[in-house]
Length: 196
Image 1: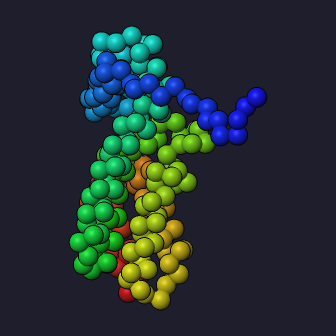
Image 2: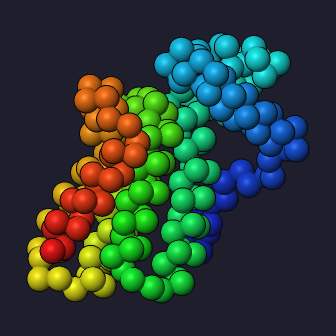
């Protein structure tokens, strides 16, 4: 007979040191190959071969290229969050903080656009509804509230948030041939016009 307080324990064995080392090696190798050849031109097999591990080792850590890209993006996203927390904790003008934050996110999207696009056909793709990006909107909204202008804060947050989407960035960079400076300046100009 089962007791009411029975807790079913998952296998919580610590990850082996060699498994951690292999995972880090795979991430470093993928990052290097993506930088050299472009995300779309690097296969999972090429990553395993360049890292000197078997395909089984690669697939034990990452189910597919999208999973691998998400792992790489996770660290970048954490660093962006840390920079943001530090900047916002310093106080100061919320308009300047908003412009800084939009520039930081635009830079993140520009640098990581190819990885953000991997797996876009999947429901859990790194799009606007993904939890990893929703904090961007929350930050924009919080700063707009601090600014205190008589605007529709939610709708304005959405407008600025959508402008940071990887699809918009792709369109601006590849179709319209805007450089990153023009994109950031356009974001800041838009903010200033909305807040005027």
